[in-house]
Length: 274
Length: 365
Image (cartoon, rainbow over all chains, first blue to last red; front, top):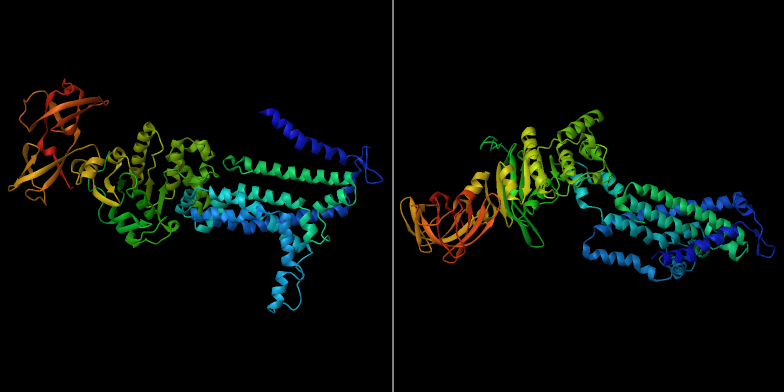
């Protein structure tokens, strides 16, 4: 049992990560190759305000995406989980359907909707609600829409799981003890579904840091995030060691958040989601 | 120690249910329930699963609304008052302790919702913890408690609010027999000490008989009979009550003739006379019930009370008594024989059955 697992972990986890870590500690070759001399230069370079700003902006927009997904996702997941059983699966199915299509194609679909001569602008002009096309695409706002849209199901599914298994008698008990519906929500529902909130937030926050093609396509290349930065180092700038160092930093952050989640959910072993 | 009949005052009632009806998807769960509950009374709703007892309790708690009828508490209509505004508290069958709060916070929850001052809150929770003997467990989480301990916390969490009425939904159902017996006693003492009206739901007839001031025997969404445990046990009105509360042999007999105060009854080939009951008619069918412990077996015909010849079928040991089955012309009857009275007989032997006429109960069909 254990041997295939070890082989799997070696091939797909240990070796790639070791490679990235190794490359991040090497120097950049003159013609875009790797010069095998040890240096911490790549990590020090990341401390440049330009890159810290990109990282900060990435963390900020990912946080904002997470918050929006949570604000829309919680009531949505709540409604699905509390709807009659016969509709529940259908509603969940509708959330999952977009997964059957490549997310790159879905992003292009958004571009069709949002671009200057796109569906939305055409309609707005047609009905006289706008005199000239609105700039719906190619800025941070468009990236936000793309990220929220793409990652929304990752928020809804863990939230749904934790709300669905919420024992209704706990809510009745709170009601019985004099808690109004609002106070029942704050004192019982929210704390008991907290692990779902954390799990959903991580599942949205972490990928949104790395989803480079959405800022590329919907931000029009103007919006630089940590994901694009890494991609560009490998493909455009051909600075593999620096790209690897940025990757390691991103990975470190990710592990940090998972560690945080484990700490939070340790006190609630009954509701582990991730 | 049971309170004597009439010790609690009826009326004034603390609670009145007037013709409650409730159905789900055209299936009637509660079918015209009317009931009055006296102040400080221990009233049990007893019946098999699906008889509507839990739904009745949920209507009282305010978790559900009746389709028709009225609930009055202290003469005020509370039918449509939401649960959180009602002066009643519930002990749930599954305890429903909040898993993210420790024992202290669970018990304090109701007081916090009522914005009770912190010093008073701590005093009242501490008092309640000692009443249910859980003081050392105040900092434990519910998952670290045993079933009996959770039960005590659930009771404390409800009682700390000093409700006018405590609703208990099969609160001892999940406990093992020994703990259940112990908790029955503790609950009864607590109720007498605090003087709070208890409305208790159970399907356990023994629990109902030992704890209640009055029992409402429920079947198919209706109350079949309401009365003290003695009334319910000794004078069951219906076949259902006779059979559900305690064990009973049901006999189908005919009324042969009516006299001034008695009636002649014929069961199989045997005739005997009983005092008349209100709606009896000549030549009509009548159902009789007799408890197994009120039947006696003797090997020979030597007694003077009604004697019926029967065939011995089998005998099983049941601890305090032997459970013996005999048949009279094809009808099987259960007899509880006390160990000192047990007769020697084997399958197929002729034995004689006797009973005191006053133990024969006329029940409605």
